[in-house]
Image (cartoon, rainbow, N blue to C red; front, side, top):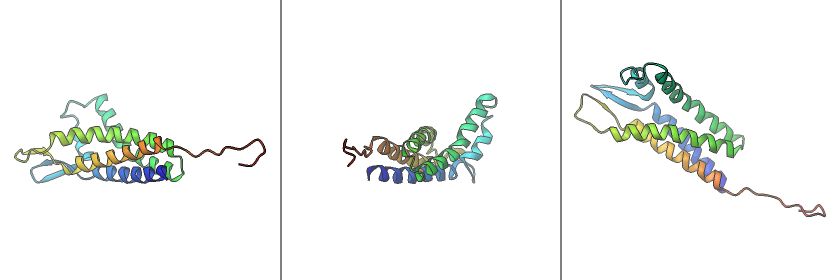
Amino acid sequence: MRRTWGAVVGVVGLITGVAGTFLPWLRSGSVVRNSYEVLAFRGFAGLDGAAGEVVRGVWVAITPLAVSCVVLWVLRLHRFAACAGLVFGTIAGTVAALAAVQGGNEGALVGITLTGPVVTLGGALLGVAGAITVLTAKSRTVIVSPGGAP
């Protein structure tokens, strides 16, 4: 039962985390951009070479990673899904936490909005909590006696 609840919490966290990546992350005047649109500006942050491509590739890959986690949980491959959920939570949670800490500058012309990072961080935390719950749940084992009856 504990594994099932962990999987449910993990799936809710993954869905919430991915949804948060599509919410506003950056505000420039009256224009808001989600996390994927912000990746277009990675050259301004000094990440225009190979490092920028790695950052883009990892961030874009978190959505398929979350989908694969959900599929693994549906297929009842709980441990694999939980391990992938930990990877998702680590990547998405770290980026969202860094953005949330930098956000909140209401008077600036260009600034980070807290909506996307906070929702993504909350989803990542739920995903990690669900994954840890699944990984620490005891699995049922059947002990068969030498006579053949369980």
